[in-house]
Image (cartoon, rainbow, N blue to C red):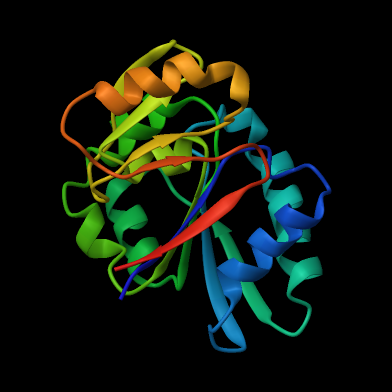
Length: 188
């Protein structure tokens, strides 16, 4: 069974819900765990800063775990091996378009993450959904469709009209609207 942990964005904020999110990612995993950080939604010059943030978040929120953390490689064959050898795939937010374009190059991505923990924040949540509302481009877009859901990250009540657009778009699917710092777990 694959465990999907979808997060509404802003994981770097030092709030209790974000701490719980990082604990949930490693919950029920062995003491020794391998985490792959996917930053394709970010500029490469940001990777090291994000790596330090995420390394801190994983280690400080699960101090009892022995965590081996690495950054995903853009070379597809190396990336495929990294995913296969990881327990957790954590896809951080940013610009959804480059992330989608990169992951579309792995048509077996859904199979590669099978029986693992997939944690996606904002763009990482959009990646696995069927449809999502893009706050940046102000329109509904298509994810990879791994999960038959519609999603809305960075949610707040001021976006109610956008939520209605998402509800009425395409087929009738469950909708997950998550504010920054909120997360939900889907197991399948």
